[in-house]
Amino acid sequence: MTTQDIVAVEGSTRPDADVLLRATDVTKTYPMGRKVLRAVDGVSLEVRTGETLGIVGESGCGKSTLGRCLVRLTELSGGRVEFDGQDISTLSARRLRPVRPGMQLVFQDPQASLNPRRRAGDIVAEPLLVHRYGDAAAVRRRVAELFDVVGLASAHLDRYPHEFSGGQRQRIGIARALATDPKLIVADEPVSALDVSIQAQVLNLFADLQEEFALTYVFIAHDLGVVRHVSDRIAVMYLGEIVELADTEALYEDPAHPYTQALLSAVPDIDDGTLTDEVPRERIILTGEVPNPVDKPTGCPFRTRCPYARERCALERPRLAPTASGRHTACHYPLTG
Image (cartoon, rainbow, N blue to C red):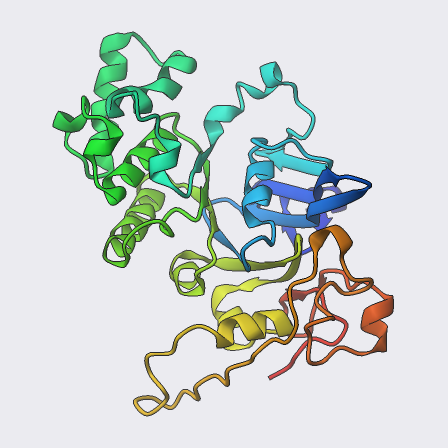
């Protein structure tokens, strides 16, 4: 393999053939009077074919905005996104249209993402009609197949969204995403609006679909338990930046960034250590408020809440870089052990 066959990006170095989606220094800003809100601030990552990359962080950290940028649902303010080897960052709507079937998005709230005035079958059929799948009969057959794939009856094709439960509505959203045979699905908190009893069913559906259709997922969530269940790797976001990127089990067993450590300590632990040899996590309470993203702190954005911050943290912004343990962390003094 030649040097040209390897592309180095913050957070990973992988052969091109192994990477379905690559984001390089992606930025999304919004003007706020005389200042600028940096919702996504220089994010670089890679998503490998067939994997699930989880993205977690507190509300308002930029997770959903990043997901929309990755599929060009939101225009980038800077940086580059490559999908399946093609730079899609600046493609016009006309040139982006042939790319759209390969990347789809499942929204957080199924009730808000489905048109209440259209029948469920028509909602799922819409992407097929837009991309000229076939005649009316072929589209109808395909929609019935998709309903069966996601666990809905074809008899439900003519029902309206309000006639379904929350879990069923999300299955309709998933069927719509599958309609164009995508390679990549960005799932934006797809179970957070569902009852706990239904969440497991939908998560199992995602897993079954990934195996059946060789899908690649970007799975966005704030529930770290959910992300651990579905993800191969996890990226942790804070104030629009990725502060840690690691394999799932490595991140949960030994977080390197103080923010990740604090997030994991807040996950309820059913086993307090009395049933296993595992030592329960010590609860870490972060002091202070989340900084205003319009006026981010100098240096490390987490330093105002970090119990380990030093003088260098206020002067120099840490970059996402590999640590001795192999994960990538944006911290001048990554944790060990």
